[in-house]
Length: 58
Image (cartoon, rainbow, N blue to C red; front, top):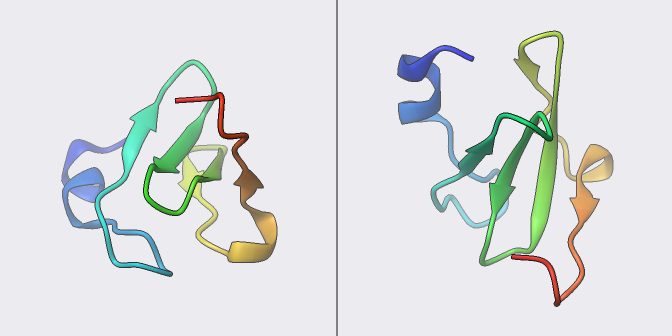
């Protein structure tokens, strides 16, 4: 994933920063508890495609 792209991407819901989890191929918004998938190097920034993270996952 391009580091320049990671610098400008924000959560589409809260506009907060995202953490890239390379192993899981996800961009994570901690405040919204959503994990957006990265497919073939392309972030899918749609709420319907995001995985709701359980409260126990950090």
